[in-house]
Image (cartoon, rainbow, N blue to C red):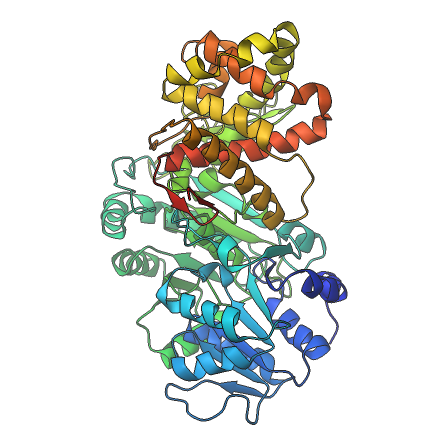
Length: 605
Protein backbone atom coordinates (compact mmCIF):
# COMPACT_ATOMS: atom_id res chain seq x y z
CA UNK A 1 0.00 0.00 0.00
CA UNK A 2 1.38 3.39 -0.98
CA UNK A 3 1.19 5.70 2.01
CA UNK A 4 0.67 9.44 1.98
CA UNK A 5 3.58 11.58 3.01
CA UNK A 6 2.13 12.46 6.42
CA UNK A 7 1.32 8.80 7.14
CA UNK A 8 4.86 7.71 6.34
CA UNK A 9 6.20 10.52 8.54
CA UNK A 10 4.15 9.26 11.51
CA UNK A 11 5.35 5.68 10.91
CA UNK A 12 8.97 6.85 10.75
CA UNK A 13 8.57 8.75 14.02
CA UNK A 14 6.43 6.13 15.78
CA UNK A 15 9.31 4.40 17.64
CA UNK A 16 10.17 7.73 19.27
CA UNK A 17 6.49 8.46 20.02
CA UNK A 18 5.94 5.19 21.89
CA UNK A 19 9.29 5.59 23.63
CA UNK A 20 8.24 8.98 25.04
CA UNK A 21 4.49 8.51 25.62
CA UNK A 22 2.19 5.78 26.87
CA UNK A 23 -1.14 7.48 26.07
CA UNK A 24 -1.32 9.84 23.09
CA UNK A 25 -3.58 11.21 20.37
CA UNK A 26 -2.68 11.25 16.68
CA UNK A 27 -4.43 14.31 15.25
CA UNK A 28 -5.13 14.52 11.54
CA UNK A 29 -7.95 16.14 9.53
CA UNK A 30 -11.14 14.40 8.47
CA UNK A 31 -10.45 12.49 5.28
CA UNK A 32 -6.68 12.30 5.80
CA UNK A 33 -6.66 8.52 6.21
CA UNK A 34 -6.48 7.82 9.94
CA UNK A 35 -7.92 4.29 9.62
CA UNK A 36 -5.32 3.41 6.99
CA UNK A 37 -2.61 4.76 9.30
CA UNK A 38 -3.91 2.69 12.22
CA UNK A 39 -3.87 -0.44 10.08
CA UNK A 40 -0.31 0.22 8.92
CA UNK A 41 0.88 0.92 12.49
CA UNK A 42 -0.54 -2.44 13.57
CA UNK A 43 1.24 -4.11 10.61
CA UNK A 44 4.58 -2.46 11.30
CA UNK A 45 4.74 -2.49 15.10
CA UNK A 46 2.03 -4.81 16.49
CA UNK A 47 1.96 -7.81 14.16
CA UNK A 48 0.49 -10.82 16.03
CA UNK A 49 0.00 -8.63 19.12
CA UNK A 50 -3.33 -8.07 20.92
CA UNK A 51 -5.22 -5.01 19.68
CA UNK A 52 -8.48 -3.48 20.91
CA UNK A 53 -10.15 -0.80 18.76
CA UNK A 54 -13.00 1.20 20.31
CA UNK A 55 -15.47 3.58 18.71
CA UNK A 56 -18.81 4.96 19.84
CA UNK A 57 -21.15 4.26 16.90
CA UNK A 58 -22.29 1.18 14.99
CA UNK A 59 -21.66 2.93 11.66
CA UNK A 60 -18.06 3.56 12.67
CA UNK A 61 -17.81 -0.06 13.77
CA UNK A 62 -18.83 -1.25 10.30
CA UNK A 63 -16.28 1.06 8.67
CA UNK A 64 -13.46 -0.02 10.97
CA UNK A 65 -14.23 -3.70 10.38
CA UNK A 66 -14.13 -3.14 6.63
CA UNK A 67 -10.96 -1.03 6.81
CA UNK A 68 -8.97 -3.41 9.02
CA UNK A 69 -10.13 -6.85 7.77
CA UNK A 70 -7.98 -6.82 4.63
CA UNK A 71 -4.76 -6.89 6.62
CA UNK A 72 -5.73 -8.33 10.01
CA UNK A 73 -7.71 -11.11 11.63
CA UNK A 74 -10.58 -9.06 13.05
CA UNK A 75 -13.43 -9.87 15.40
CA UNK A 76 -16.38 -7.57 15.99
CA UNK A 77 -17.45 -7.90 19.60
CA UNK A 78 -20.97 -9.22 20.03
CA UNK A 79 -23.53 -8.13 22.57
CA UNK A 80 -22.98 -11.12 24.88
CA UNK A 81 -19.47 -12.49 24.41
CA UNK A 82 -17.99 -15.21 26.62
CA UNK A 83 -14.71 -17.05 26.65
CA UNK A 84 -11.14 -15.85 26.41
CA UNK A 85 -10.20 -12.70 24.45
CA UNK A 86 -7.89 -13.02 21.40
CA UNK A 87 -8.40 -16.79 21.12
CA UNK A 88 -8.35 -16.88 17.29
CA UNK A 89 -7.98 -13.25 16.21
CA UNK A 90 -5.58 -10.34 16.72
CA UNK A 91 -7.87 -7.29 16.52
CA UNK A 92 -11.02 -6.86 18.58
CA UNK A 93 -13.27 -3.99 17.55
CA UNK A 94 -16.22 -2.77 19.57
CA UNK A 95 -18.26 0.15 20.77
CA UNK A 96 -17.47 0.99 24.38
CA UNK A 97 -20.85 -0.30 25.59
CA UNK A 98 -20.78 -3.88 24.28
CA UNK A 99 -20.09 -6.93 26.52
CA UNK A 100 -18.39 -4.84 29.18
CA UNK A 101 -16.95 -7.72 31.23
CA UNK A 102 -15.40 -9.33 28.17
CA UNK A 103 -14.13 -5.94 26.93
CA UNK A 104 -12.55 -5.23 30.33
CA UNK A 105 -10.63 -8.52 30.12
CA UNK A 106 -9.46 -7.71 26.60
CA UNK A 107 -8.25 -4.23 27.59
CA UNK A 108 -6.33 -5.72 30.51
CA UNK A 109 -4.59 -8.12 28.10
CA UNK A 110 -4.06 -5.81 25.12
CA UNK A 111 -0.78 -4.49 23.74
CA UNK A 112 -2.46 -1.57 21.99
CA UNK A 113 -5.78 0.14 22.71
CA UNK A 114 -6.98 2.39 19.87
CA UNK A 115 -9.88 4.80 20.42
CA UNK A 116 -11.43 6.34 17.30
CA UNK A 117 -12.97 9.83 17.53
CA UNK A 118 -10.90 10.29 20.70
CA UNK A 119 -12.34 13.75 21.43
CA UNK A 120 -15.36 11.86 22.79
CA UNK A 121 -13.28 10.23 25.53
CA UNK A 122 -14.59 11.42 28.89
CA UNK A 123 -12.09 10.62 31.67
CA UNK A 124 -14.89 11.13 34.20
CA UNK A 125 -17.85 9.66 32.28
CA UNK A 126 -19.43 6.25 32.79
CA UNK A 127 -18.78 5.05 29.23
CA UNK A 128 -15.00 5.51 29.32
CA UNK A 129 -13.78 5.99 32.91
CA UNK A 130 -13.95 2.30 33.83
CA UNK A 131 -12.15 1.30 30.62
CA UNK A 132 -9.41 3.91 31.08
CA UNK A 133 -8.92 2.83 34.71
CA UNK A 134 -8.67 -0.79 33.57
CA UNK A 135 -6.01 0.09 31.02
CA UNK A 136 -4.00 2.03 33.62
CA UNK A 137 -4.28 -0.73 36.22
CA UNK A 138 -4.08 -3.98 34.24
CA UNK A 139 -2.49 -3.41 30.83
CA UNK A 140 1.24 -4.05 30.68
CA UNK A 141 3.80 -1.28 31.09
CA UNK A 142 4.63 -1.49 27.40
CA UNK A 143 0.97 -1.31 26.33
CA UNK A 144 -0.08 1.91 24.58
CA UNK A 145 -3.30 3.93 24.33
CA UNK A 146 -3.63 5.60 20.92
CA UNK A 147 -6.43 8.07 20.17
CA UNK A 148 -7.44 9.17 16.68
CA UNK A 149 -9.33 12.40 16.00
CA UNK A 150 -9.43 15.51 13.85
CA UNK A 151 -10.55 17.73 16.74
CA UNK A 152 -8.83 16.95 20.06
CA UNK A 153 -10.95 19.09 22.37
CA UNK A 154 -13.69 18.46 24.91
CA UNK A 155 -16.55 20.95 25.00
CA UNK A 156 -16.95 20.71 28.76
CA UNK A 157 -15.73 23.12 31.40
CA UNK A 158 -15.59 20.30 33.99
CA UNK A 159 -11.94 20.15 35.04
CA UNK A 160 -12.30 16.42 35.81
CA UNK A 161 -13.44 15.76 32.25
CA UNK A 162 -10.59 17.11 30.13
CA UNK A 163 -8.60 15.31 27.44
CA UNK A 164 -5.41 16.26 29.27
CA UNK A 165 -6.36 13.74 31.97
CA UNK A 166 -6.76 10.83 29.54
CA UNK A 167 -3.80 11.40 27.23
CA UNK A 168 -0.18 12.38 27.77
CA UNK A 169 0.29 14.13 24.42
CA UNK A 170 -1.27 15.18 21.15
CA UNK A 171 0.86 14.46 18.10
CA UNK A 172 0.04 16.81 15.21
CA UNK A 173 0.29 14.59 12.16
CA UNK A 174 -0.98 16.79 9.34
CA UNK A 175 -3.04 19.93 8.88
CA UNK A 176 -5.75 20.68 6.35
CA UNK A 177 -3.78 23.30 4.43
CA UNK A 178 -0.87 20.90 3.99
CA UNK A 179 -3.19 18.15 2.72
CA UNK A 180 -4.89 20.56 0.31
CA UNK A 181 -1.49 21.41 -1.17
CA UNK A 182 -0.83 17.68 -1.59
CA UNK A 183 -4.32 17.25 -3.16
CA UNK A 184 -5.35 14.75 -0.49
CA UNK A 185 -8.14 17.21 0.37
CA UNK A 186 -9.83 19.89 -1.71
CA UNK A 187 -10.12 23.56 -0.69
CA UNK A 188 -13.30 24.89 0.87
CA UNK A 189 -15.04 27.84 -0.78
CA UNK A 190 -17.03 29.51 1.99
CA UNK A 191 -20.29 31.33 1.30
CA UNK A 192 -21.33 32.86 4.61
CA UNK A 193 -24.67 34.66 5.00
CA UNK A 194 -26.00 36.57 7.99
CA UNK A 195 -29.72 35.86 8.35
CA UNK A 196 -31.18 39.09 9.75
CA UNK A 197 -34.42 37.61 11.08
CA UNK A 198 -32.84 34.64 12.88
CA UNK A 199 -33.10 35.50 16.59
CA UNK A 200 -30.33 33.92 18.66
CA UNK A 201 -29.39 36.69 21.09
CA UNK A 202 -31.92 35.95 23.85
CA UNK A 203 -31.39 32.20 24.01
CA UNK A 204 -30.14 30.65 27.25
CA UNK A 205 -26.76 29.12 26.38
CA UNK A 206 -25.79 28.09 29.92
CA UNK A 207 -25.63 24.44 28.77
CA UNK A 208 -22.82 25.32 26.36
CA UNK A 209 -24.84 25.54 23.14
CA UNK A 210 -28.12 26.82 21.75
CA UNK A 211 -31.05 24.76 23.16
CA UNK A 212 -32.25 22.58 20.28
CA UNK A 213 -35.97 23.24 20.79
CA UNK A 214 -35.52 27.03 20.90
CA UNK A 215 -33.11 26.90 17.98
CA UNK A 216 -35.50 24.80 15.92
CA UNK A 217 -38.39 27.22 16.49
CA UNK A 218 -36.22 30.23 15.64
CA UNK A 219 -35.00 28.65 12.39
CA UNK A 220 -38.46 27.67 11.20
CA UNK A 221 -39.83 31.15 11.96
CA UNK A 222 -36.97 32.80 10.07
CA UNK A 223 -36.07 32.94 6.38
CA UNK A 224 -33.01 30.74 6.98
CA UNK A 225 -34.14 27.58 5.16
CA UNK A 226 -35.51 29.61 2.26
CA UNK A 227 -32.16 31.43 2.00
CA UNK A 228 -30.26 28.14 2.07
CA UNK A 229 -32.33 26.60 -0.72
CA UNK A 230 -32.07 29.62 -3.03
CA UNK A 231 -28.34 30.00 -2.44
CA UNK A 232 -27.89 26.28 -3.04
CA UNK A 233 -29.68 26.42 -6.40
CA UNK A 234 -27.21 29.11 -7.52
CA UNK A 235 -24.06 27.54 -6.09
CA UNK A 236 -24.74 24.06 -7.49
CA UNK A 237 -24.20 25.58 -10.95
CA UNK A 238 -20.55 26.24 -10.07
CA UNK A 239 -19.82 22.57 -9.39
CA UNK A 240 -17.92 20.57 -11.96
CA UNK A 241 -19.90 17.38 -12.53
CA UNK A 242 -22.78 16.26 -10.30
CA UNK A 243 -23.65 18.42 -7.30
CA UNK A 244 -23.79 16.12 -4.27
CA UNK A 245 -24.65 17.89 -1.01
CA UNK A 246 -24.90 17.22 2.72
CA UNK A 247 -27.21 19.41 4.81
CA UNK A 248 -26.69 19.64 8.59
CA UNK A 249 -29.76 20.42 10.73
CA UNK A 250 -30.27 20.71 14.51
CA UNK A 251 -33.35 18.49 14.78
CA UNK A 252 -35.96 16.51 12.85
CA UNK A 253 -38.44 19.41 12.61
CA UNK A 254 -35.90 21.60 10.80
CA UNK A 255 -34.75 18.65 8.69
CA UNK A 256 -38.30 17.82 7.58
CA UNK A 257 -39.04 21.45 6.73
CA UNK A 258 -35.76 21.64 4.81
CA UNK A 259 -36.65 18.50 2.85
CA UNK A 260 -40.08 19.93 2.05
CA UNK A 261 -38.55 23.13 0.67
CA UNK A 262 -35.79 21.34 -1.27
CA UNK A 263 -38.42 19.13 -2.94
CA UNK A 264 -39.97 22.28 -4.46
CA UNK A 265 -36.90 22.46 -6.71
CA UNK A 266 -37.42 18.90 -8.04
CA UNK A 267 -34.17 17.61 -6.57
CA UNK A 268 -33.60 14.04 -5.39
CA UNK A 269 -33.46 14.46 -1.62
CA UNK A 270 -33.46 12.13 1.39
CA UNK A 271 -33.53 12.56 5.16
CA UNK A 272 -31.40 10.53 7.57
CA UNK A 273 -31.43 10.61 11.38
CA UNK A 274 -30.09 8.56 14.27
CA UNK A 275 -33.38 6.61 14.19
CA UNK A 276 -33.00 5.58 10.54
CA UNK A 277 -32.47 1.77 10.57
CA UNK A 278 -28.88 0.80 9.80
CA UNK A 279 -29.70 -1.18 6.62
CA UNK A 280 -31.87 1.64 5.26
CA UNK A 281 -29.17 4.12 6.18
CA UNK A 282 -26.50 2.19 4.26
CA UNK A 283 -28.71 2.09 1.14
CA UNK A 284 -29.31 5.85 1.35
CA UNK A 285 -25.60 6.56 1.82
CA UNK A 286 -24.72 4.39 -1.18
CA UNK A 287 -27.22 6.23 -3.39
CA UNK A 288 -25.89 9.56 -2.16
CA UNK A 289 -22.30 8.59 -2.94
CA UNK A 290 -23.26 7.70 -6.50
CA UNK A 291 -25.21 10.95 -6.93
CA UNK A 292 -28.59 9.22 -7.31
CA UNK A 293 -29.58 11.21 -4.22
CA UNK A 294 -28.31 14.76 -4.68
CA UNK A 295 -29.20 16.28 -1.31
CA UNK A 296 -28.82 14.32 1.91
CA UNK A 297 -30.34 16.07 4.93
CA UNK A 298 -29.12 14.84 8.29
CA UNK A 299 -29.65 15.21 12.02
CA UNK A 300 -26.69 14.17 14.15
CA UNK A 301 -25.34 11.29 12.07
CA UNK A 302 -23.01 12.63 9.37
CA UNK A 303 -20.60 14.83 11.33
CA UNK A 304 -18.47 11.83 12.36
CA UNK A 305 -17.43 8.62 10.64
CA UNK A 306 -19.22 9.28 7.36
CA UNK A 307 -17.16 9.07 4.20
CA UNK A 308 -18.46 10.25 0.84
CA UNK A 309 -15.57 11.77 -1.11
CA UNK A 310 -17.98 12.80 -3.88
CA UNK A 311 -19.80 15.24 -1.59
CA UNK A 312 -18.93 18.70 -2.94
CA UNK A 313 -21.42 20.99 -1.18
CA UNK A 314 -21.99 21.38 2.57
CA UNK A 315 -25.04 23.33 3.72
CA UNK A 316 -24.87 24.37 7.37
CA UNK A 317 -28.30 24.95 8.92
CA UNK A 318 -27.25 24.54 12.54
CA UNK A 319 -25.94 27.56 14.46
CA UNK A 320 -23.68 26.20 17.17
CA UNK A 321 -21.20 27.17 19.87
CA UNK A 322 -19.29 23.94 19.19
CA UNK A 323 -16.04 24.43 17.31
CA UNK A 324 -15.78 20.62 17.22
CA UNK A 325 -19.11 20.22 15.39
CA UNK A 326 -18.25 23.00 12.92
CA UNK A 327 -14.87 21.45 12.13
CA UNK A 328 -16.14 17.88 11.90
CA UNK A 329 -19.12 18.65 9.68
CA UNK A 330 -17.35 20.92 7.18
CA UNK A 331 -14.45 18.48 7.06
CA UNK A 332 -16.81 15.85 5.64
CA UNK A 333 -16.87 17.71 2.34
CA UNK A 334 -13.12 18.16 1.91
CA UNK A 335 -12.18 14.65 0.81
CA UNK A 336 -10.74 14.55 -2.68
CA UNK A 337 -12.34 12.63 -5.55
CA UNK A 338 -12.06 12.40 -9.31
CA UNK A 339 -13.04 15.70 -11.02
CA UNK A 340 -13.66 17.33 -7.62
CA UNK A 341 -11.97 20.73 -7.47
CA UNK A 342 -13.51 22.26 -4.35
CA UNK A 343 -16.19 21.98 -1.72
CA UNK A 344 -18.67 24.84 -1.49
CA UNK A 345 -19.68 25.52 2.13
CA UNK A 346 -23.00 27.38 2.31
CA UNK A 347 -23.24 28.69 5.87
CA UNK A 348 -26.49 30.41 6.82
CA UNK A 349 -25.76 29.82 10.52
CA UNK A 350 -23.04 32.45 11.09
CA UNK A 351 -20.67 29.64 12.04
CA UNK A 352 -18.01 30.81 9.59
CA UNK A 353 -18.00 34.32 11.04
CA UNK A 354 -17.90 32.80 14.55
CA UNK A 355 -15.16 30.18 14.18
CA UNK A 356 -13.48 31.02 10.88
CA UNK A 357 -12.37 28.54 8.22
CA UNK A 358 -11.92 24.98 9.48
CA UNK A 359 -8.36 24.91 8.15
CA UNK A 360 -7.44 27.62 10.70
CA UNK A 361 -9.08 26.11 13.79
CA UNK A 362 -6.96 25.77 16.93
CA UNK A 363 -7.58 23.14 19.61
CA UNK A 364 -7.14 23.03 23.38
CA UNK A 365 -6.46 20.13 25.73
CA UNK A 366 -8.08 22.11 28.56
CA UNK A 367 -11.17 24.29 28.56
CA UNK A 368 -12.52 26.40 31.39
CA UNK A 369 -16.07 26.66 32.70
CA UNK A 370 -17.26 29.40 30.31
CA UNK A 371 -15.05 28.78 27.28
CA UNK A 372 -18.08 28.60 24.96
CA UNK A 373 -19.07 32.20 25.75
CA UNK A 374 -16.42 33.38 23.32
CA UNK A 375 -18.68 32.14 20.53
CA UNK A 376 -21.74 34.01 21.76
CA UNK A 377 -20.42 36.78 19.52
CA UNK A 378 -21.47 35.50 16.08
CA UNK A 379 -18.76 37.65 14.50
CA UNK A 380 -16.09 36.35 16.91
CA UNK A 381 -13.55 35.26 14.27
CA UNK A 382 -14.07 38.27 12.01
CA UNK A 383 -13.69 40.61 14.98
CA UNK A 384 -10.28 39.09 15.74
CA UNK A 385 -9.21 39.48 12.11
CA UNK A 386 -9.45 43.24 12.71
CA UNK A 387 -6.13 43.04 14.58
CA UNK A 388 -4.13 41.14 11.96
CA UNK A 389 -0.84 42.96 11.45
CA UNK A 390 -0.67 45.05 8.25
CA UNK A 391 -4.28 44.21 7.46
CA UNK A 392 -5.25 45.55 4.02
CA UNK A 393 -8.77 44.14 3.88
CA UNK A 394 -12.09 44.54 5.60
CA UNK A 395 -15.28 42.46 5.91
CA UNK A 396 -18.56 43.70 4.49
CA UNK A 397 -22.14 42.59 5.04
CA UNK A 398 -24.00 42.98 1.76
CA UNK A 399 -27.22 45.00 2.02
CA UNK A 400 -28.16 44.58 -1.65
CA UNK A 401 -31.60 43.24 -2.54
CA UNK A 402 -31.96 40.13 -4.66
CA UNK A 403 -34.73 39.32 -7.12
CA UNK A 404 -36.91 37.93 -4.31
CA UNK A 405 -36.74 41.21 -2.39
CA UNK A 406 -34.54 39.63 0.26
CA UNK A 407 -31.29 41.17 1.36
CA UNK A 408 -28.32 39.34 -0.14
CA UNK A 409 -26.63 39.21 3.33
CA UNK A 410 -23.35 37.72 2.12
CA UNK A 411 -20.41 38.36 4.45
CA UNK A 412 -17.38 38.87 2.23
CA UNK A 413 -13.78 40.00 2.37
CA UNK A 414 -12.77 43.09 0.39
CA UNK A 415 -9.48 44.88 -0.20
CA UNK A 416 -9.71 48.23 1.60
CA UNK A 417 -8.82 50.37 -1.41
CA UNK A 418 -10.63 48.31 -4.04
CA UNK A 419 -13.98 49.02 -5.66
CA UNK A 420 -15.15 45.43 -5.43
CA UNK A 421 -18.92 44.78 -5.37
CA UNK A 422 -20.60 41.85 -3.65
CA UNK A 423 -19.43 38.70 -5.49
CA UNK A 424 -22.92 37.19 -5.31
CA UNK A 425 -25.34 40.01 -6.21
CA UNK A 426 -22.85 42.61 -7.55
CA UNK A 427 -24.33 45.27 -5.29
CA UNK A 428 -22.23 48.04 -3.74
CA UNK A 429 -24.69 48.54 -0.86
CA UNK A 430 -22.99 47.12 2.21
CA UNK A 431 -22.08 47.60 5.86
CA UNK A 432 -18.41 47.64 6.82
CA UNK A 433 -18.36 45.37 9.87
CA UNK A 434 -15.37 47.17 11.38
CA UNK A 435 -16.06 50.84 10.59
CA UNK A 436 -19.77 50.77 11.36
CA UNK A 437 -19.30 49.05 14.73
CA UNK A 438 -21.62 46.21 13.81
CA UNK A 439 -19.51 43.66 15.69
CA UNK A 440 -18.67 43.37 19.35
CA UNK A 441 -15.12 43.86 20.55
CA UNK A 442 -13.30 40.53 20.41
CA UNK A 443 -12.99 38.76 23.71
CA UNK A 444 -9.22 38.49 23.54
CA UNK A 445 -8.57 41.88 22.05
CA UNK A 446 -5.24 41.78 20.21
CA UNK A 447 -4.66 45.43 21.12
CA UNK A 448 -3.71 44.19 24.62
CA UNK A 449 -0.60 42.64 23.09
CA UNK A 450 0.49 45.95 21.59
CA UNK A 451 -0.15 47.96 24.77
CA UNK A 452 1.47 45.40 27.08
CA UNK A 453 4.67 45.03 25.05
CA UNK A 454 5.02 48.78 24.49
CA UNK A 455 4.09 50.16 27.90
CA UNK A 456 5.38 47.65 30.48
CA UNK A 457 9.11 47.95 29.58
CA UNK A 458 8.86 51.77 29.55
CA UNK A 459 7.00 52.02 32.89
CA UNK A 460 9.37 49.49 34.50
CA UNK A 461 12.52 51.30 33.36
CA UNK A 462 11.29 54.57 34.96
CA UNK A 463 10.16 53.18 38.33
CA UNK A 464 11.78 52.47 41.66
CA UNK A 465 10.85 48.77 41.84
CA UNK A 466 11.65 48.39 45.55
CA UNK A 467 9.00 50.96 46.48
CA UNK A 468 6.30 49.40 44.32
CA UNK A 469 7.00 45.79 45.26
CA UNK A 470 6.48 46.81 48.90
CA UNK A 471 2.95 47.91 47.94
CA UNK A 472 1.78 44.27 47.60
CA UNK A 473 -0.55 44.31 50.61
CA UNK A 474 -2.40 47.54 49.77
CA UNK A 475 -2.51 46.80 46.02
CA UNK A 476 -4.37 43.53 46.60
CA UNK A 477 -6.43 44.68 49.63
CA UNK A 478 -8.06 47.60 47.81
CA UNK A 479 -8.30 45.97 44.36
CA UNK A 480 -11.60 45.70 42.47
CA UNK A 481 -12.30 42.57 40.43
CA UNK A 482 -10.65 43.92 37.26
CA UNK A 483 -7.57 44.98 39.20
CA UNK A 484 -7.32 41.53 40.79
CA UNK A 485 -7.40 39.96 37.33
CA UNK A 486 -4.83 42.42 36.03
CA UNK A 487 -2.51 41.56 38.92
CA UNK A 488 -3.15 37.82 38.38
CA UNK A 489 -2.14 38.28 34.75
CA UNK A 490 1.09 40.02 35.79
CA UNK A 491 1.81 37.19 38.24
CA UNK A 492 1.13 34.57 35.57
CA UNK A 493 3.40 36.36 33.09
CA UNK A 494 6.20 36.32 35.66
CA UNK A 495 5.60 32.74 36.87
CA UNK A 496 5.06 30.93 33.57
CA UNK A 497 7.88 29.32 31.62
CA UNK A 498 8.81 30.90 28.31
CA UNK A 499 10.38 27.74 26.94
CA UNK A 500 9.36 26.55 23.51
CA UNK A 501 6.85 23.69 23.36
CA UNK A 502 6.42 21.03 20.69
CA UNK A 503 2.91 19.85 21.49
CA UNK A 504 -0.39 20.96 22.99
CA UNK A 505 0.37 18.74 25.97
CA UNK A 506 3.66 20.51 26.71
CA UNK A 507 2.02 23.94 26.29
CA UNK A 508 -0.75 23.08 28.74
CA UNK A 509 1.55 21.43 31.28
CA UNK A 510 3.50 24.70 31.57
CA UNK A 511 0.32 26.80 31.55
CA UNK A 512 -1.33 24.78 34.33
CA UNK A 513 1.87 24.84 36.41
CA UNK A 514 1.75 28.65 36.27
CA UNK A 515 -1.97 28.67 37.10
CA UNK A 516 -1.23 26.49 40.12
CA UNK A 517 1.44 28.99 41.30
CA UNK A 518 -0.98 31.92 40.91
CA UNK A 519 -3.71 30.09 42.81
CA UNK A 520 -1.28 29.19 45.57
CA UNK A 521 -0.13 32.83 45.83
CA UNK A 522 -3.75 34.03 46.11
CA UNK A 523 -4.74 31.31 48.59
CA UNK A 524 -1.83 32.07 50.90
CA UNK A 525 -2.91 35.73 51.02
CA UNK A 526 -6.63 34.86 51.39
CA UNK A 527 -7.47 36.66 48.15
CA UNK A 528 -10.79 35.57 46.61
CA UNK A 529 -11.79 36.16 42.98
CA UNK A 530 -15.47 35.51 42.13
CA UNK A 531 -16.34 33.67 38.91
CA UNK A 532 -16.92 35.98 35.95
CA UNK A 533 -19.64 35.29 33.40
CA UNK A 534 -17.62 37.00 30.70
CA UNK A 535 -14.06 38.22 30.69
CA UNK A 536 -12.78 40.82 28.24
CA UNK A 537 -9.03 41.08 27.90
CA UNK A 538 -9.19 44.81 27.14
CA UNK A 539 -9.73 45.40 30.85
CA UNK A 540 -6.15 44.22 31.36
CA UNK A 541 -4.76 46.97 29.15
CA UNK A 542 -6.83 49.72 30.81
CA UNK A 543 -4.26 50.60 33.49
CA UNK A 544 -1.50 50.69 30.89
CA UNK A 545 -3.43 53.12 28.69
CA UNK A 546 -6.51 54.96 30.05
CA UNK A 547 -6.44 54.05 33.76
CA UNK A 548 -10.22 54.33 34.14
CA UNK A 549 -10.77 50.85 35.61
CA UNK A 550 -7.33 49.88 36.91
CA UNK A 551 -5.79 52.54 39.14
CA UNK A 552 -2.12 53.66 39.27
CA UNK A 553 -1.23 51.76 42.47
CA UNK A 554 -2.37 48.44 41.01
CA UNK A 555 -0.87 49.24 37.60
CA UNK A 556 2.55 50.09 38.98
CA UNK A 557 2.62 47.19 41.42
CA UNK A 558 1.65 44.82 38.58
CA UNK A 559 4.39 46.18 36.32
CA UNK A 560 6.92 45.82 39.16
CA UNK A 561 6.04 42.10 39.35
CA UNK A 562 6.55 41.27 35.69
CA UNK A 563 8.52 44.12 34.10
CA UNK A 564 11.98 42.64 34.68
CA UNK A 565 11.17 39.93 32.14
CA UNK A 566 11.61 42.48 29.37
CA UNK A 567 15.23 43.17 30.33
CA UNK A 568 16.30 39.57 30.93
CA UNK A 569 14.34 37.62 28.26
CA UNK A 570 14.33 37.61 24.47
CA UNK A 571 11.22 38.82 22.67
CA UNK A 572 10.39 35.23 21.64
CA UNK A 573 10.49 34.05 25.26
CA UNK A 574 8.23 36.91 26.38
CA UNK A 575 5.82 36.20 23.52
CA UNK A 576 5.49 32.59 24.66
CA UNK A 577 5.03 33.72 28.29
CA UNK A 578 2.35 36.21 27.18
CA UNK A 579 0.31 33.57 25.34
CA UNK A 580 0.35 31.19 28.31
CA UNK A 581 -0.43 33.99 30.78
CA UNK A 582 -3.55 34.88 28.75
CA UNK A 583 -4.79 31.32 29.16
CA UNK A 584 -4.10 31.40 32.90
CA UNK A 585 -5.97 34.63 33.62
CA UNK A 586 -8.94 33.64 31.44
CA UNK A 587 -9.26 30.35 33.35
CA UNK A 588 -8.97 32.12 36.72
CA UNK A 589 -11.67 34.62 35.68
CA UNK A 590 -14.02 31.89 34.46
CA UNK A 591 -13.55 29.48 37.38
CA UNK A 592 -12.80 31.96 40.15
CA UNK A 593 -10.47 31.53 43.14
CA UNK A 594 -11.76 30.34 46.51
CA UNK A 595 -10.27 28.71 49.59
CA UNK A 596 -12.00 25.37 48.94
CA UNK A 597 -11.29 24.50 45.30
CA UNK A 598 -10.02 21.07 44.26
CA UNK A 599 -8.76 20.74 40.68
CA UNK A 600 -6.95 17.77 39.08
CA UNK A 601 -3.73 19.79 38.91
CA UNK A 602 -4.19 21.87 42.09
CA UNK A 603 -5.28 20.78 45.53
CA UNK A 604 -5.10 23.11 48.52
CA UNK A 605 -3.88 20.33 50.81
